[in-house]
Image (cartoon, rainbow, N blue to C red):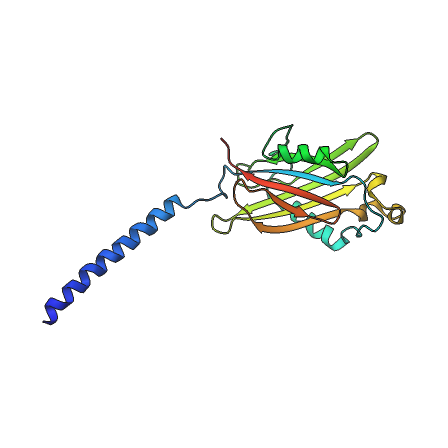
Amino acid sequence: MKETSSQPRSGPTRRILSFVSTVLLALAYVSPSIADDRTGLEYLIFRLEALPDDSPAPANLQNKLLALKEISGSAAPTGQGHSLVGEFGALGSAKERLNQSPRYLVILHAQAQRTAAGRFAPVRFRIKKGKTESDIQVYFQLRGADTRLLSASIVYDPTDSQSIPQSEAASDQRQSSWVIRDTRKINAGEVNYIDHPRFGMLVVATHPD
């Protein structure tokens, strides 16, 4: 009786284990990943056109140094893989709405592609409008097929007088940088808004057609 009762158990057990193994192998091949070598990032940086008098102070020096350290500490070639976006792109409609509003000013609309090493290179943009000039440094890191974490460090130095309150105009301009440091989960095609008291950024992960 013991021999006949043990065989029915082992048969279904082996079949179940075989089925589970097959499913796990199949999932390993079809599980979606946005953190592959084809993934690009499109981003749009904007700020308030007219800042209120009680705007929060700029980011402190420590945050600025941390963001600069992340940017300069990347092993990727600096400046490669970032390019400006024209009227279209995944964020084209958002850019159009922002441009139509008298409250906001689009500063930068660009896209970043991965380097041969699979990283997003840090980049520095010098933005000139008339006699004013601003400086933006951008660093992205997208890691993990499972976690899908996007880390962003943005250092924005608005040197135009309109963006700097009178109380700060006499201080060192280099102390007036505005910094975004953010890490979040993202999905391909999903527009993410990263907020700051004085400026903001929209970013979306894209795949090539």
